[in-house]
Length: 342
Image (tube, rainbow, N blue to C red; front, side, top):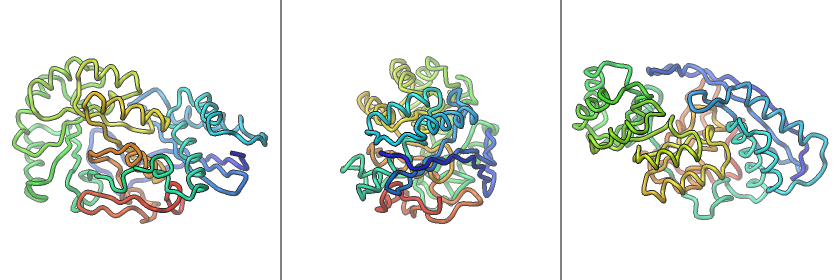
């Protein structure tokens, strides 16, 4: 690949509406990278770090992107993809979201040039459709079979009342993902699991602090409801640690936190090999990052509902999103990432 131009710009997204949670989700900051190659093809990527998952800050992501840009500027050599990925990793060692953004832009170009959607560029057997979950309070729930509900910040009786209301509204066949965001200790979590066993619970996500793996393993002994980890997943080493403790049934993989496409693939294979369930989740970043996470779900043949938020959630987004039907989306056949109006 020969580089013609690289542009990097900050972006702040404002949510159409705030949704009730223990974490503020009113806005989101991202870096957008646009790479143009010598043949005039342009690819886009998005870096949107999450401090709750690792030590990467927004500023660190920006420095890493600029470092990569400087490294390849004024070089007219035709980079092989292998040496290019080595260069990317060298400049994004402590900035996984920057790595994810640069790789997305590169693969966006390469798949366009092969006249393939990004998922099929990586894997001819990539899934043509994906299961997706809705997010309570953020998007339209009528098209989903699984709804994610932020919990852990209400009192227990209010949590139960909300689940009763949602079950009545959407039907007894709808499943719920309950995201606690690390807000419980072990006794609270044990009581919570006992109180919610009457509902259709797909899994309870991160009920305890991310480092409390022994308590998470203990919690799994008290209920048949699956336990998922999200914040606990901070890289390949952390996945090995979670598996060694047998601390979870489901592992939620955020590409913005893991970084490279190859690490996401490695993580999925590792989790499946231990008969656990992997799933892909976006970080509520902008459309470019969410589309990339969608392709990664397809590439890695994720069969559980992915948390991709593939609806218009920010004020300045267009409406070109995949249509959700009965909890499923079909991936675009457009070449590359498939986003519009980037």
